[in-house]
Amino acid sequence: MNAVRRSRMPTAHGWPHGLAAAALAGCAALALIAWGTSFPRDADDTGDDRVGAGRTCRSALPSDQELSCGTYGFGDLRYLCPTPDKPRHCATTTGVRVRNTGPSTVYVTVIHGARQGERRQGPEREIAPGRTADLRPGKGHLLFDLTLRGTGPVKSLTVVSVR
Image: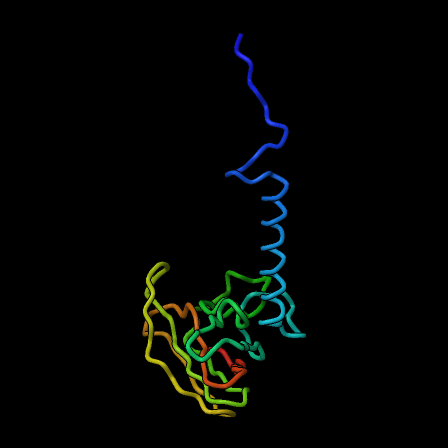
């Protein structure tokens, strides 16, 4: 008769299950805390993930690192929708006007493509504090993202208008 011997402490990749689960939970909690303190959400954020006037992208990353404003602040840049409850009435975003609302010069790059899965990176644009810039995808392209970097301790862009 074959008997299966069971260990008193089951393991996963050499770690006891309880210890592995605790380590994973701890890492997830640290990631959430870091995200929440590094990239606060706007006070008027309604949970709608569409780009709109007043949305802000803030970064405290070092000057050699870029932040995705589509992910951390602006929301989905591909389409302009009049209201969240009417997704069929959305139009392709043709441009976004942004203002540098931070204390130092920022550098912004447009990420665009003709279709999902295709990404092109436009030239980096320099925007001085208090200045605005119109950012557009290539003709017939979708606007996938805007990346933000800069030399100051805090970089901040606010959407002025969307077309």
